[in-house]
Amino acid sequence: MFNVDASSSTPIYQQIVDNVKESILKGLIEPGEKLPSVRELAKILTLNPNTIQKAYQELERQKVIVTLRGKGTYVSSDYKPRRDEYKLMEVKELFKKGIIEAHYMGFKEKDILNIIEELFKELEGVDEND
Amino acid sequence: MKMIRVLNLDKYLGGDKILDNVNINVEKSSIYGLIGPNGAGKTTLLKNIVDIYRPEKGEVLVLGENIKDNKKIKSQLGYIADYQYFYPNFKVEQMVDFYRNTYPLWEEKKYIKLKRIFKLDEKKKISSLSKGMKTQLSLMLNLSISPKVLILDEPTSGLDPVIKRKVLDIIIDEVSTNETTVLISSHHLGELERICDHIGIIHEGKILLEDSIEKLKSNVRKVQVAFKDGIPEDIKNNRDILKIESRGRVYEIILNDHMDEFISQIKQYNPILLETIDMSLEEIFIYKMGGVGYVFEDITI
Image (tube, rainbow over all chains, first blue to last red; front, side, top):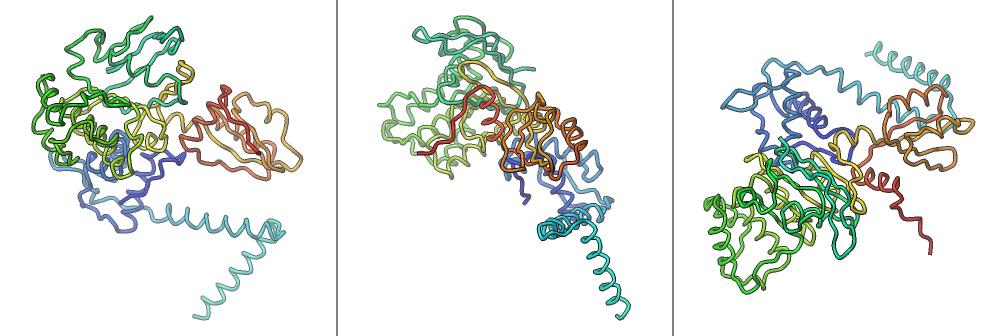
């Protein structure tokens, strides 16, 4: 269900928090839907249950999920994921790769910014014509 | 409450000091990993904790009481040794009977469930079991006694990946369901990294460090940095540096602590490269051991 890299420097509980939020964003889990219990998730992922507990506590603190005593843990029906946060990270990564490549070709910051300006003109041109 | 406390423990075996002023603390329903090089004293320490060995100095408290000759506490303690010392002429069912009649908190329902999971033939003779099967048997028996504390000495060594996974799953299930406290020694840092919340590193009989994995990973960090005109002296001489290696202009620096201050310090010199690199528990262990001289030189034959 979720991918966790135990050898990463990012704490495992943080990865789970991010994973859950991302899954909600992508529509893999929907508001109001039931999540696995701490015990079930620990078993599925072969992870320390205290770690899962910590992740769930954090998600609850952020009002992403809610625990109903005796019933289980559910995604909040009124959680509105902020699209921007995740898309922004993805886009930043893309830019980073492009800048590194350009740098290795000998482009300086000014040159790269010029390229971006050119691209905008190109794309805006396309938009206007549509 | 601390379920296991080892206090200032010394242990000698045949005149050699195997354990030197060892202090260990394991919290309730924690999964604590004991790691260390071969011969560091892991097995000796675990044997002291379950009262198979007696310390020359110091004491062991389990569930708040001294373990020495303590039947009450031992009946709540499960121990899976590195080698299983079952009576070889016994059949599996006789061994089960032995545990069933010895441990007051034996849970038959649990045993039946575990029997189904592990698919062990009760009619078999113990001597005909492989190492892996003996480990499984030990696990079955020691979980069926409803332990509050579970001690495992390299439980996954010699097991195939499928059984290994089963063993880890069962340990996790035990902790989730019964809040069992687990102390596990292993070489397999990849596994420990997933399931443990705390680790203790033992080296030449001494405890090198004891900490939560989360804290360890947030303190020990790897940075790649490069400067146009070479690395500034005060960066190079930072006292938190565990190791520093250069490949051309790029320096790879392992930091013991105070990452944020170090990064701020580096930024003042306008580095042409500054990247933080993830470190696995295995890497952290290797570098920490390197810090105490347990290191292998690069070998070229």
